[in-house]
Length: 212
Ligand SMILES: C[S@@+](CC[C@H](N)C(=O)[O-])C[C@H]1O[C@@H](n2cnc3c(N)ncnc32)[C@H](O)[C@@H]1O
Ligand SMILES: Nc1nc2[nH]cc(C(=O)O)c2c(=O)[nH]1
Ligand code: SF4
Ligand SMILES: [Mg+2]
Image 1 (tube, protein in one colour):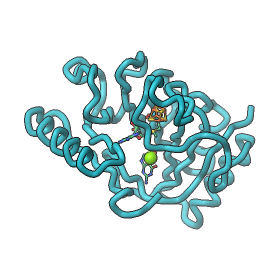
Image 2 (cartoon, helix red, strand yellow):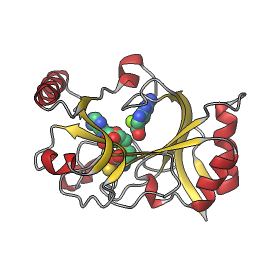
Image 3 (tube, helix red, strand yellow):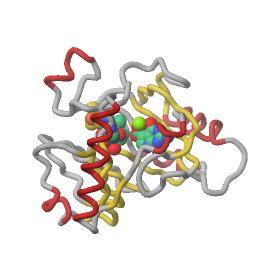
Image 4 (tube, rainbow, N blue to C red):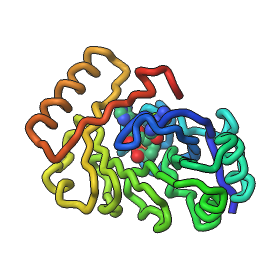
C-alpha cells in the first residue's frame, strides 16, 4: 500500500484540547465529502472547508510507502524521543490510514492523533481521536476523545451529539474568509457555549499566530 500525501510540516496543534502542542501534521490528499475543486464546493456535502488537500504538491508531499512516510515524519520531528506527536489529517485521513502506517509511527515513538469527519470508522490503535461532524453526512464514529463541531452548521443536532461517547465536546467558529461573518460566527459560538456548559470553545490559534 502507498499513501498520497499533500504535505507534511512541523507546527503547533492550533485547535481543540491539544492546542499549543508541538506536532508534525501529516495531511493526506483527497476527501469523501468534497472533491477540493472550487467549482464543486456549492454541491459538496462539506462546503466550508478551509484546506487545500488536492494533489501531492505541498511541502514534503508525494507518494510514500509506510516505512518512508513514518521515517519522514520522524525526520521532521527532529531530535528527542519524548512527547513525539503526529496529527493525521487531510482531506480525510481515514481513506488511507492503515495498520502499516500506525505501526510504523508507533515504532518511532509517536503518539498518533487524527482529525476525521467521522464517516469512516477510525483506526483502532490511534491514540487521540478528534471527530468533526458535517451536517448531511452519516457519522459512524460516535466515540473518541474529542468531538469538534464547526459552528454554525444548520442541520446539526447538538443534543444528539452530546449523547455520543466523547470525552470532550467543542464548538469551533467557522472561518468563512470574511471578517464580519467570522465575527458573527465567533459570537454565535460563544453564546452557544455560555448556554451549554458541557461544550467548550475551540479557536484556530494557528491562524492568529500565522503558523501553518
Ligand atoms: C480540514 S479538516 C481535515 C480532517 C477531516 N476531513 C475533518 O473534516 O475533520 C480539519 C479540521 O478543520 C476543520 N475546518 C475545516 N474548515 C473549517 C472552517 N472553515 N472553519 C473552521 N474549521 C474548519 C474541520 O472541521 C476539521 O476539524
Ligand atoms: N496548526 C494547525 N493546527 C491544526 N489543527 C487541525 C488542523 C487541520 O487542518 O486538520 C490544523 C492545521 O492545519 N494547522
Ligand atoms: S470533511 Fe474535512 S477535509 Fe473534507 S471538505 Fe470537509 S473539512 Fe475539508
Ligand atoms: Mg487546518
